[in-house]
Each structure stands twice: as structure tokens, then as C-alpha cells.
Image (tube, rainbow, N blue to C red):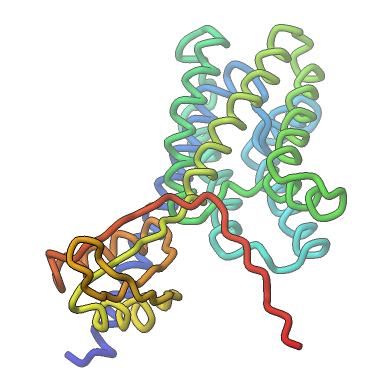
Amino acid sequence: MTKQNLWQKQNFINTLKEFILITLGAAIVASTIFLFMLPSKVAIGSASALAMVLASFIPLPISVINLFINVFLLVVGFILIGPEFGAKTVYTSIIIPVFIGIWEFAFPNFQSLTQDPVLDVLCHLLIVSLGMAILFSRNASSGGLDIVAKILNKYLKLELGKAGALAGTVVALSSYFCNYDTKLVILSVLGTYFGGIIVDNFIFNLNIKRRVCIISPKLDEIVDYILHNMHSGATLYNVIGAYNNTPEREVVTIVDKHEYRKLMEFVRKTDPKAFVTVYSVNEIRYQPKVWG
């Protein structure tokens, strides 16, 4: 088998694995919405919550309304922002309402498992965070109000976190029109707030990169791997060890968590005795040089 065939086979396996994980994450999110949010009528800010509110006035299943909302937001997003929404966002925007529809078909008269809206909110936040974590780990999202947040970010210059919180809060407050219960409205707002904290935490952790510094006699092989296999940048420094004044070379590169695992595996195979230091990097800014 040629290298080209091996690469195609590995690429297919990786794509299939990513598809399965995104589908699993979407299934968890949809199941949590059906099992805990919809029965309690607590509208934790999302497109599904908005669909639940609109279902009080529109004689259609919540899953169908949710699908219409997501498709509408995708179209608006493409028009106002451009083709920034990849295939993963389109896929999750469609598959989540489909999963909810499957639950609706299987259990048309489903009642709350806990019979307590507070417990429903807690269970929803706990389990939906697992599904969102899986989606975020594959650089996917649940679509819906994420698109609204990006629109507000572009045109009103709101930070993405604040824009998402604003859109979610408006949806949570609108729950009053489908249940007329102040307690459930307050739970909706609180659930939206704490759900935002959970999501922000996942996004923050995913944005953390690692600054890896490596000193090794086999540095040329490591640098070649970073540049041509990982397609990442790197910087070389001349350093001197204080203990014996021996000149060495050090490579420094910035990688995400997936690249970090690949790099560490290669370093362990190439030079198990390599000297490696790792730092967390929360933000990277690039300022292009101005040449005179």
C-alpha cells in the first residue's frame, strides 16, 4: 500500500471518527432537551427553547419549529456574515431537531422524569455540558443562537459571550408567554446564565494552547516534523547550559491540545531523553511587520 493510499485511509478513519463523535454529542444535547427542558417548560436560552415557546402558538411539533428556526438562522447567517459556518454547524443545526423529533415520535406524551423544574434544570445543565464538550472538542457547535451571537458581534460589536448571553436571556424571558409562571421564567434566566458559564468554560479551555520548548540532539528531525507533518510554525534559539556551558539549540512552537499530543508522541519515539518544557498560552496576537 502506497503512502498516498495510507494517507487516504487514515483521513477516512479520522473523518468517520469525527462524524460519529459529533453525532453522539448532538444526540446527547437533543436527548437532554427532550428529557429535561421541554417537559418542565424551562426555556434555557437556545433555539430549542425558542421553538418550545413558539409551539404554544403554532400547531407544529417542537422539533419541526426548531428545524425551521435553525435553517432560517443559517440562511440569515450566510447573508449577513458570509460562509463562516462550516459543514459541522450546518449538520448539527439539522441533526439536533431530527433527534428531538425521534424522541417526540417515540414518546408523544412524555412527562418530566423528576416532576421538579429545579431538578430538571440541574440535570439539563449537567448532561448537556457533556454533549457540548464533545461538540466543542471537534470544533463544532449546536448552531441556533450561536449564529445570532455572531451577528450581534459583527454589527453591534458585542463580545461573543455577551452577545450569546443577551440572545439567550431574551429567549428565556419569552418563556413567560408559554407558561405564565414567574418561577419558571426565573429558572429559565438562571439556567441560561449558568449554562453560559459552562459553555464559556469549555470555549476558554479549548482556546488554551501550549508553548512547547524542546532541546534535543535530534532537533532537526523534530523541527522537520513540526514544519512538514504538523504544518505548524517554530522558532529556533541558541542557548547555553549553565551547568557545563555547552551550546545547544532549542525549538519553540505553539500548538493546540491535539497537536500537542501528536508532537509529544513523536518526541518520545525520536528522543525519549529530550528536554521539554510546556507552558499554557491563553491568547495569541499577531502584529504584522511594517517594512520601511
